[in-house]
Length: 107
Image (tube, rainbow, N blue to C red; front, side, top):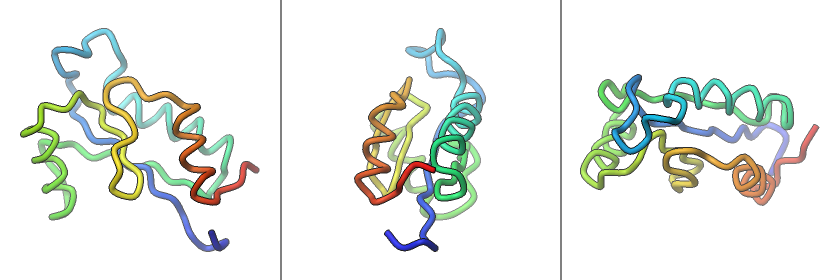
């Protein structure tokens, strides 16, 4: 990975938890938590963006939001480079491994 590339971590969800995830943090809280954890480990090499599946901003976000709804995925859904890495409660270790496999080095 070259120095100018930034890995974007997308966190899809809603302000309300899905019925299967009521005991977990909301998607907004998860995005905030992931942003803090990833910033500490990778600095500015990784960016986290929250996408509300009820109000996506781009066509690509809309298409992925529709997929989440149609496939009844548990949100938050964490996506990096169009690959779903987590549904519901993400595991940091798995995200770290995926990000590092993309060539990002911890700071």
